[in-house]
Length: 320
Ligand SMILES: NC(=O)c1ccc[n+]([C@@H]2O[C@H](COP(=O)([O-])OP(=O)(O)OC[C@H]3O[C@@H](n4cnc5c(N)ncnc54)[C@H](OP(=O)(O)O)[C@@H]3O)[C@@H](O)[C@H]2O)c1
Image: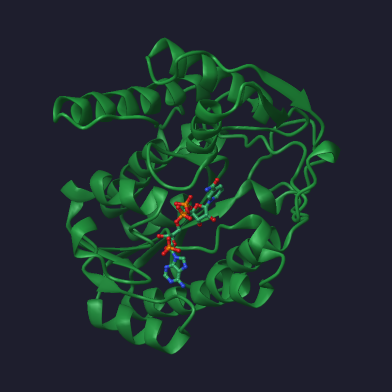
């Protein structure tokens, strides 16, 4: 199997390259090639025709599309670019996948929901995105659904890893610099590690490759993949402080004061409630998500291990 991963330098793409390694030949691509990161191919999702030609030339059997415009606030000022990456590029990838009879595995977001719910969202819950990012991701989902290609659509939420741009690393940096943090307490969701998402991706691709055409139809479509349980950003930040301090990543558990979203105006509105129901993931694919606090523990252990390895080389480590 030739497995193309777009956005291979991002949080999910990077982990996916590791998780999928045993399943076939991995072709890593990002906006620019980066041999130091193992990214051999340049594929710019903003350039539709170059993307089409590039993917055709790579001749994949599976496309894992981890590339996206993920800067939620910046997207408000660049809706064209968000639409190009999160919607129109998906149309191109789906076209090529259909031509080749390849599988397209694509990621979407809890931000396609409005956020006024009180029960975890199932895959068929009505969508009502509030932001440019959410609308562009929903347009990508809708394009995929009518594309005629074989696809798996993994909706996820609050993704973080030991590397990349994410809430965990932002909190650790801020905690090392400030005596107190203020974090919104009225948005609730499911923190999800990029590693769990990548491992689940590998499970689904393996299952797909071992299933006949009739069985594949039952696997197809949307599937929610997120950490179990739920927490507010403030609760998540507090857990980060306690666990990071216990592992020696912070000299103290920096206090976190709860604030309302209205006290922290952001350019893009966020859903207040964006908990994903993962019943389908468990029932159809046999994957049980770990509780979000377990994912946090694993990621912090990974950071602590990296710090120890770096210290052992004689470099002084000042910050996470
Ligand atoms: N992060 C979250 O909290 C979250 C939540 C729900 C869903 N998701 C979805 O999960 C998927 C993966 O997200 P992630 O957190 O791994 O995102 P990420 O870390 O921001 O990675 C996105 C990747 O896409 C690349 N990219 C950006 N513009 C590109 C272009 N024009 N052409 C080719 N590649 C381009 C980025 O490269 P550069 O770094 O060079 O820009 C980066 O490698 C996305 O579909 C996202 O919508 C994420």
